[in-house]
Image (cartoon, rainbow, N blue to C red):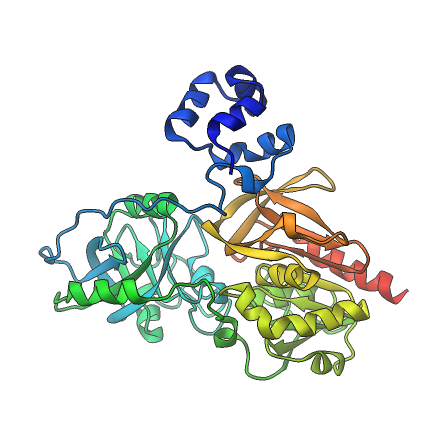
Length: 456
């Protein structure tokens, strides 16, 4: 890792550094003072100096300094019926909603302004408690269509404001009642800005969310439970959220006013490996003309080939890709060797990269929200994307037969790869959105076009 002074010198000094990064010299002074360079300037610095992410001060591969615990009283204040206790001892008091009980998990934040029900049911959030930075969570209620899995994957949620009565014509249930039915606790009324800043500056901490209507809490026991939880690194969660047996999928994307449709005339058969697949990914594949057969995460190469697929899709999912790779990589490598078209998203992107010979690492700050800018290095275009991941591919570890296709404009991390000697590509973000923008929907059609070329 290079020091801030080294990087400024490589840029040609303070004035040259300011010009190259599009900032004033006052910003350069702040870099020196904080001994860190904001991640949004990394792409310009890497391009100007030839450095790598590993050289950058504050890169995700470096150890993040741990912030001081927030001074919060161990005794519940009047009216408190829920609390969040972090592994460092910090306590946040608030009002509980949803199910009574407790959940231990990694605490993350999501910046999306819409789609909280889709977020809560995204299987990639297994093992996590979500802090929503947008205050109006619950205002449109819940319904039976805006789900990415039958049950919520997130272990809990944290919001600023109390959940209000739903005000939307599609609502069929209050968020509180929906959470109760699924056994998911919630915490409202805390300073979500302070918690988000804590996560931003120190990385996602482990913590316990506890909801008790009687307001009685054993804070010492909750601290011990939070400190003793092992964290997501090294944890295989795909086995927990994958399907238990194979099934066919033909439902297409939702459209007003008709709702979901059906794919009655598919052109190509696609095997979708379910590491925690979102339903809207399967809908997008069906809408693109695919006859989708979903297989469990543990399916072997023989089970994949038995479906006689024209292409293979590697889904999103939770946990550490290296842990899931212990059983997933042999099957993916066999598909690569057969040169069947492959498309991967999120965890699928990481697994494809591992199968090609790359490495992955845990980000100090994950990417979660519906406003993440990504640059396509092939076209130069910028897409606003929906993302949810805490691990990333190390681009320096990619082999000679793979190339970087997309990068994050937030921190310069890898957002896409493609093999150069076989039909395989993947992206770190979620082109199916749900929730989020539709800038990247074209990638499903790119996959189909790859299948068409392979069959020609």
